[in-house]
Image (cartoon, rainbow, N blue to C red; front, side, top):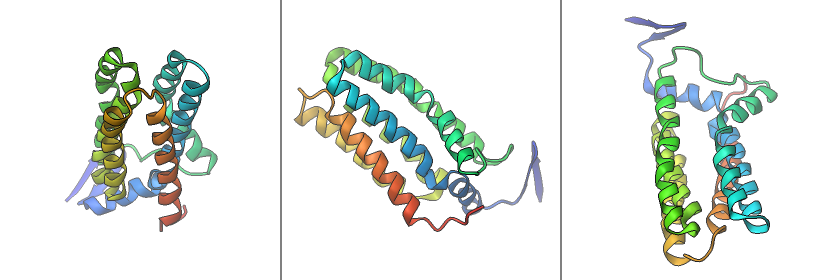
Length: 191
């Protein structure tokens, strides 16, 4: 049975094939995690040497540009900037993308209660945001990243309630290390 959705033909596409497409297109998430890690790094640095307000703005506003910057990075590497129209994983990717902005209300509530919970709360929602990536990419590594962010955020909030930027630095380092790990451990065919 051949199903045609938009311009992408799916001939009983298996989940593993669709996941491989996501891994190949997005370099196992390495470019997106690099972009995210750099935004977190900039925010943590500004939170350390600037103001809390500036740090929050950098992370929130910078976060809005993660996907466009990831697409730009992929294009600069000579790769396609996204999955073909009609690919079966596009709908899931779109749903996952909307999880973060909708959950930012929780980050705001946590930060209003204790400004030092801004980064830990953000870590928690970013970690839960990565849980569906396990299926989307077909990569267990996203489960490890999600767990580190979720438990790291809770741990930092509980053990270091007076530290504003610790969660920002930890997240930046985790995201950048993850990007390096998945890129160098990948066996993705180069297009």
